[in-house]
Every structure is written in structure tokens, then in C-alpha cells.
Amino acid sequence: MSIPASLSHLIDALRILPGVGPKSAARMAFHLVQRDQKGALELANALENALGALKHCRHCNTFTELDVCEICLDEQRNHAQLCVVEMPTDLMSIEFTRSYEGLYFVLMGRLSPLDGIGPNDIAFKQLLERASDGSVEEVVLATNFTTEGEATAHYLAEMLRARGLKVSRIARGLPVGGELEHVDPGTLAQALIERRRV
Image: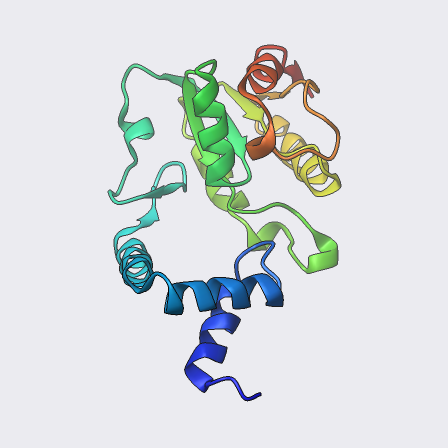
């Protein structure tokens, strides 16, 4: 059976999502086209709107619709602490714990030599500029406890300490190989409270 080109293109487009293989993409595509065309149009509009409206915060590199995100603009936060995370989902996970009151920096990735991702492929230079702005006293490394996350934390710790900054690492209340967005808030809060110098 030949699949119409437009449907085949939709299936291929859905496969870019993490964890979506060919069968899942086909099920989603058929569902959207056959059962929920209104939902499909809302999804298309939401994607177009997000791509047009979102940009990176010029201070912390997370997604925002403004030049500077709400967290960076909040004067009540501790501007002497900077928590470094891999992705915006990690920032959201930490915020959900309500146990950290400093600012953030989002790398938008992590070192992964096997995937060809080195220091120039993520926001290391931006982070170093941000951490060296004179207001930051402590940098909290909250990268994931994966091999790549650990390598990223080690690399950053060396560079930040060389600039005279206090560097700490969130505690290992998290499972080895775990990702922040999948950790319960209590465990994540405890990991932040028990962070240690590296």
C-alpha cells in the first residue's frame, strides 16, 4: 500500500520528537488526520507561535518571550548564586521544588564527544561571561548525573574555579544515570540543600 506523500511527510516530521519511533509517529499522524483535525490545527498553530515568539534570555539562556526572563528580572532572588543546568526542563524541575532562590544559566546541552558535542557547541562562553560579571559568588552545577553530565560538571568546575569562583555540585540524592526532569521534588530539593564544593 502506498502512503500519500503528505501523510508520509507528517509521519517523518513526528519522528523528530524524542522517544517517537516509526510506529508511534504513524499512530499519531493517523489520529491527528482522522480523529482530531481541530487538535492538529491547534498543534500546528501552537508550534508556529512558539517558534515565532520564543528566544533565549540574554542573561540565563533559557526560553522566554522577552529579552530577559522573569526569573532574571526578579529582584527578590539571590543574584550571588548561579545554578547551571543542561536544559530548560531541568530549570523547571528545580523551580518546582521551591528550595532554590538564586538565578540560573541554561547550557542547552552537555558535553558529549561521542555525539560530536564539545565546549564550543553549547553555551560555555556565555556562561563564563555571566559567571564573571562581578555579582556571582557561587556557581551551583546541577547537570544530570549521567556520564556526559558529570564530564560537563567537571569541565565547568575547573574553568570556574580558575576564575576565583566558589563552585558547588548538587548532592547525589539523585540516582546515578538519572535525569532531573524525572526526579521527584523531594529528592531534588534535598540534592540542592546538600550540594558540595567541587
